[in-house]
Image (cartoon, rainbow, N blue to C red; front, side, top):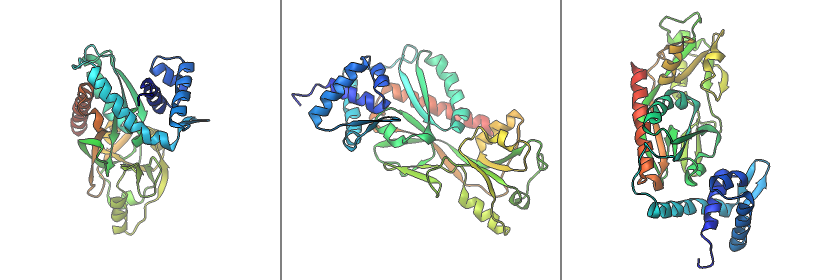
Length: 321
């Protein structure tokens, strides 16, 4: 350790988060050549390439992936030791990164941004698509500070909080022949279906480094049981990953979609769809926020968690009204 320049670990951490030398240099206010030189020194010190340049960016080696969460933890401890003890939302210029699906972005985050634009006008918010990244790695290395979604098998190093409970509803085009009336199970079973799946698994879940997240945004088991009770099998006409495309995809068709209730009501307020309850008793699932344990005592992160929790409660109340 006496021969290691700790600034090299800061460079390593930046490259791990950004996967790009130029962006890493901007993140830590060094020139790209200085970052490249630091990486060369660390490679020589550890006798490992650490990162391999590919068409999509700097890909970490197995050694780098093993090091990354430990280095991030160490840097957070150092920052906490020498940094300010208080957090003032009104004056902070801190940048926060949140991962969420487009559904959660549309339903929850507007309330959050409205509140924080007043309470923390100089804070920066970066939103990442939760469905298209290795979420666990991004949380481990500190690029994502909070992720929103439905999770299970959450590892001990990742903390969680339930924001609200969600159930499924159905939506059809506002000019659908069944719009405006109560829809029976027999009627529903005769419609082609649109469902949202973010891919990656056949059972509706994806596991990454100990964290399991839902990839099918509907309860397939309940759907199959309901259809079986009337001697039908569902026709999955459209399987696609985008919640916010649903009204446009339903327009002018007989197709029905199954979506979270808060999003169904969000769509219905636009007048583009007719939303109604499913013709069976849907199960509920928790919408959660998760974060790495290293952030739990961070005052700024605690403020972020509280702001998101308040926004989620407001969104849930608005949806239920």
